[in-house]
Image (tube, rainbow, N blue to C red; front, side, top):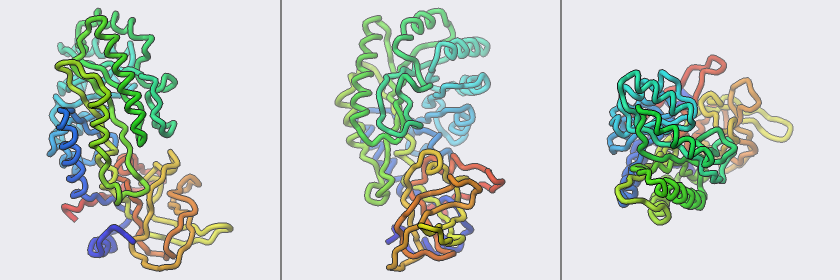
Length: 387
C-alpha cells in the first residue's frame, strides 16, 4: 500500500526518472509545528543547510523566519541569497578557510562557532584586516555520547570537533589578547540522527557545568547554542512524518539552566526536511542471483549515498505494483561499485521492469550529497506546489 495518491503516481509515470520529489505541504506542517513548540520557550532555531541546500526549499523555510546554520562559505552565501537574515546566520566547521571567513565577515553574520585556538587567532587577524569585530561562540566538546553511528558522532574527545575542557583556561587567556573578536556564546553539538532523548539530557547537564565554570570567572555568556541532531523515524515515515518537537524542546526547558538574559539556539536540519523528500526511481532490470533477486534501479549511490556511506536504512516502496505475491530483493543501483546498494533481502510485492520505486525520507542528506560519479548527470527536483 503506497502513501502516494494515484493521480500523483500517474504524473510520476510521465516524468523522466530518477528525480527527487518534495511534499511542500508536509514541510509546511513540520515548520508550523516546529515554530509552535520552540516559541513556547522563546528558543531560536537555525536551519542546518547541510541537510538540504535546495534553493526552493530554503526560500520556503525562510518564510517561517528561521535562522541559518552554515558549515561553508558557499552555504553562507546561499543563505543570504535565499533571504535569510544575516544576523541570524551562524557559521560552524572545524576547517574554515580564510576566504570563507572573509565571506562571513562581509555578511555580518551572528557568530562564528570556533573550534580551536588557531582558528580564533586567524579570525582575529582577518577581522582586523577588514576593520571588523567578529562575534564568536566557543564550540566546546562536552564528551557526551550521542548513541548514534560512529561517523555522525561529534561530541566525544576522540572526535575532531570542538575545544576540550582542559584547553579552556588557555583559550580564555588568549581571548584577552585578541582585539577583533567578541565572545558572545558557547556552542555544542554531539551528533546526528539522535533518537534517544536521554543523550540531550546528558548534554544539558554538561552545559550546566560549563556555565558554572564561566560564571565563576565572571564571564558573561549571552548565547547558548545547543546544536541539533534530532533524529527521524526512517522505518515509518508516514506514521511519524513530523518528529516530536514538543518533547525535544521541553527536555531542554526542563534540564538546561538558562541564566537571565541568555538566548538558547538550536541547529536543526534533518528533523525539518527529511520526511518531505522521496527519491523516485524506475526498475531497469530484475536479475536472478544465487540466493536472491536483484532489483536494479536507475537511481544509485550518486543520488543517495547514505546507505553506502552509513549502511543507513530507507523505506523502499513499489508505488506502481499491486501484486499480492511477495519476493525478496536486493535493491541496487547502476553504479560500478558493489557498495551501490539501497537495501538487502527486502520483502516487496513482485516487481517488474518499468515499475516505479519510491525511496523515502530523502529530504535530508539526499540531493545535497549527490554527485556526478560515473559522469552521471545531477537529477532534477520537483515540488508538490509546482508539480
